[in-house]
Length: 575
Image (cartoon, rainbow, N blue to C red; front, side, top):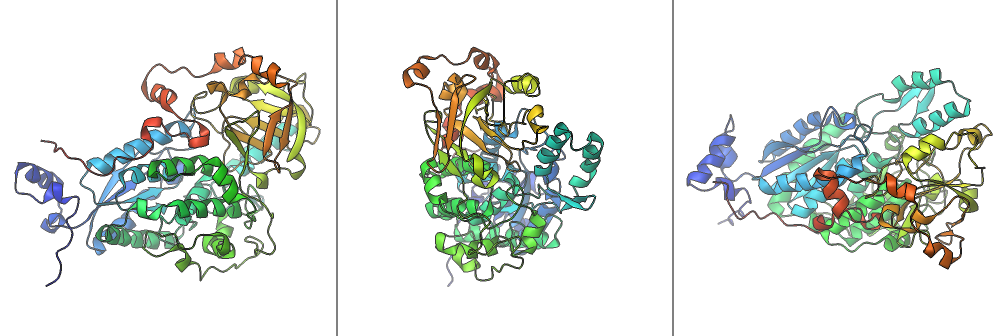
């Protein structure tokens, strides 16, 4: 006789003969066959599609393919709309609601008769929030990234989402590009469905989801318009059912080895600085110890192999054509822990044999990297005692060791008001400092750290300066930007005490960011009154809960009471 199948979590809702079981089954019928309640795995499809998240609008089509795969494998698919955050649309910043989205996703997965979940995300915060929520419940879960859009062109030149917005807008301010041409390029930038086609945060987190082991191998990086994404979505639906049957959970897949691999891959891909706060937050949900110093160690000496905007020239469609993620991972396989499990139950190393570079202009061979030592550098010093980060691959090499006098802005409004003032006391060697933009201060740690350069310097041909901020920058952005400075200004960090003219010393090789002011004099200073006056002071709702409980950037900026997880048990019934 064969062994009896293990009981499903959803049996607690559907398997009885009492009044509550009757209610659960009756209200879910609506055309579902009797067999839907006879012990089939119930698979939620957590869908972040929204018309206000343009990069995720196509995910309902992807969800249909997932559902077909779930049915084919003997499960029951159940689409679950969840909080969706459109990076380009919501104010003051999508990061303010990443933790809220993760909390809502977690609670809806836990509260419902679900045995496993397929997570559909694309735009920057959606994959991190989905993974954070799923990790805290720890039911079988896997990700289907929505994929990048196809490459757009304007007057014969490829346009990179985000990256070319920053570049072209600065050329307008410099007077080298007409505003008419800048506006005309707008219609060509977004060519198809999908998220940003640069190595911004959306592409980075989709690829790192696969490196972490949470996608069906070969899925991440597939363009949104590519029919093979739908085929992979179908197979992901099938896989979700087998994951439930095998009891394979995020805590078994996303381990210390997985995070090591993600940090190494981040450097080789030239990925977004935002990955740092998302990886730290995800590790916190799983109870995996991970610190900024470990990120620096694991990411040190990693060669940059991918020639993609913003660190290079090409776009995600080229990346896929050139061999994609498997080709990159095979080149750096000696730096990875190939034993780390994936959602298939097989180790990551089992999927790299077919990784081949088809275009060495886009994906460089290990022996000919775009940059020998990329990764994310973690800086410390008396300006950032809890840490700050910089992305050397997106910086100007000559500025990675620099000394300059501070030009300080106490808020974004202050920046906008004064940055183009012809009387602003600034030159090309100055260090632009923007503060009050951390998790508590803004609130939400917005993507403002890549400050626009003063117009008068742009007109002189300057295209990069050292910039220091306690906020974030878009993964599509570039420049010599020191960001995520911790403690933030709003928490009384040293950044709050910097004054115009203070010498700022950056030494990326030495991993230092300092202010050259006598220690006693600096310590005696009070936080700048103008910065304090501009800080967020919410009185109600999510913003107040966030500001009162958010942790620092150096830990991932999760809320203090959301760190860890509560599992999947719900002991009390609803009637």
